[in-house]
Amino acid sequence: MIKVEHLTQTYGAFRALNDVSFECQPGKVTGFLGPNGAGKTTTMRIMVGLATPTSGSVTIGGHRFADLPNPGRHVGVLLDASAQHAGRTGREVLTVSAQMMGLPASRIDEMLALVALDNEEGDRRVRNYSLGMRQRLGIANALLGDPAVLILDEPANGLDPAGIRWMRGLLRNHAERGGTVLLSSHLLNEVELIADDIVMIGRGEIVAQGSPQSLMQDTGTFVRAVDNTVLAAALDSAGLAMNAVGDGFRVDAEALQIGTLAASAQITLLELRPADGGLEDLFLELTAGTQRDALTEGALA
Ligand SMILES: Nc1ncnc2c1ncn2[C@@H]1O[C@H](COP(=O)(O)OP(=O)(O)OP(=O)(O)O)[C@@H](O)[C@H]1O
Image (cartoon, rainbow, N blue to C red; front, side, top):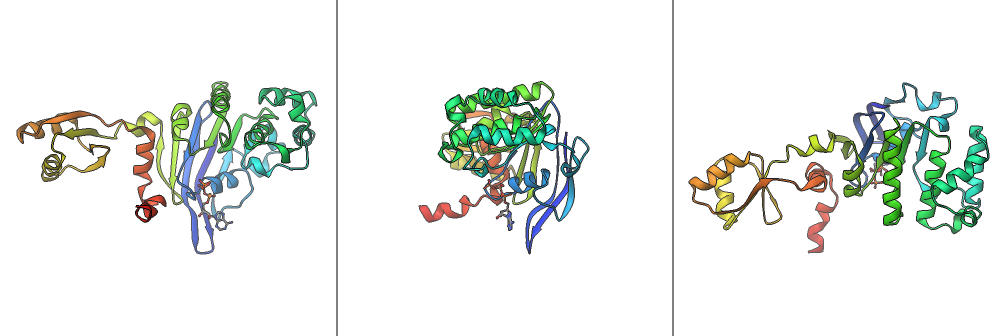
């Protein structure tokens, strides 16, 4: 289990993390989501001892990362696949890690096979790897010591569709064997498919956490009328909060209440159903105040 408690990280006057707390449970894949610059990498770097927080703590299986005697046997880390030594071959990268962890050389071939890098590719220098091949090598490196806990920053970055599906199976399997997986990603559909739990961060603060089902159950009702202007006025005068979504509105109310209201105002509805915009809508809504693109949209128009 990974336990993050009250993490705060400041750089000068800038607060990159503000009282961040969450847990990643064994047997589950936890998706870590947030807009650019929200604090995901900062949190993950602190988890694995690459940065020291201003306050707060992280423990992995009850221990601080720095106190683990052979960390690679407990925690597999992939933070930046491009940070691997470019002059070494893939096989050499894994050999150095295996030696540090006291693992047999046979483990290297096993891992290369697992991530589908063939013999010739294993002997190629990392500087000549494609992005997806670097990512595969990074995943092999993270899995080398057969750790129970995986901490992966954008592991799908650069993988082709088959590679993404392969990785989904790999992480699912890891969790089903009792492992703990934390992965950050911008691929919301991918996270929706794989995550048992979701932690959302915006501008250094947790904005939501829970299972995808629990996060999405309160997303309200979608409604659309022949005349949306009249509908909006009726919803407004009834004091119901709404957001424009697609060609209708998402309303914080039960379908029965909205339907009754529309009937009494003689408004013809075209759609009335649970809002099911999925993770993307929820993400955009919860992180609305922290999205940088909302600021630039007007400039492009
Ligand atoms: N060493 C540093 N000094 C100053 N600011 C920093 C430092 N490291 C990170 N930051 C800032 O902290 C914020 C969080 O950055 P972080 O890399 O954690 O974001 P992220 O959620 O991983 O973003 P992305 O999705 O773009 O990868 C950013 O504003 C970043 O510029």
